[in-house]
Amino acid sequence: MTKKVLAGIALILGGVIAFNWITTGELVLIPSSPLSAEGRELSRLHERFVAATHQYYQAGHAAGVSGIDTTADAQAAMDEINQIEKDLQDLKSKHLSPTETSQVDEILSNIHKLKGN
Image 1 (cartoon, rainbow, N blue to C red):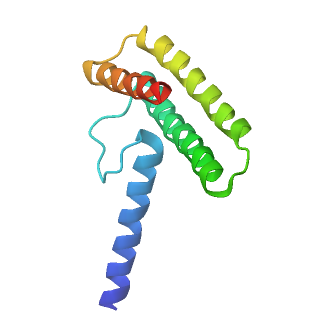
Image 2 (cartoon, rainbow, N blue to C red; image 1 turned 90 degrees about the horizontal axis):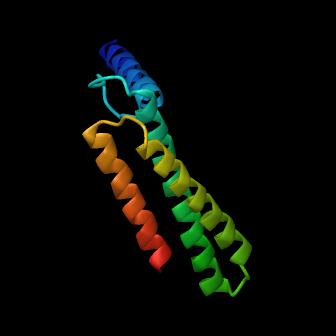
Image 3 (tube, rainbow, N blue to C red; image 1 turned 60 degrees about the vertical axis):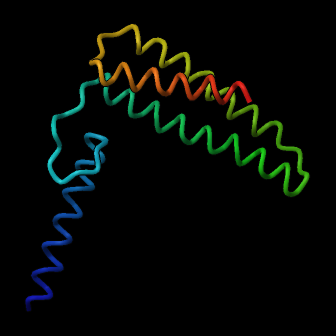
């Protein structure tokens, strides 16, 4: 009986954490504060940047390992990164908190480092 109760509590806590992650972008039990529209947009752009960067590096890795021409994949990832950069510049012109502004600057810095390679 105790195991069932503990399993139920763990399931409920997992559900609350998943709900908070989906709605606020934070993996916490109790969110500190709801994200603003700009904060949600920044979180979405960061996730897109991570995915595009992964796709870009995967294309390079696949080309190096197997010799397959992956220039189309790499170009698609770079096009996505360029769009993310433009969206971040647009977002930066909106009213952001200092934390959000530093996050935008960090992502833009990472984009410039990636393009430098």
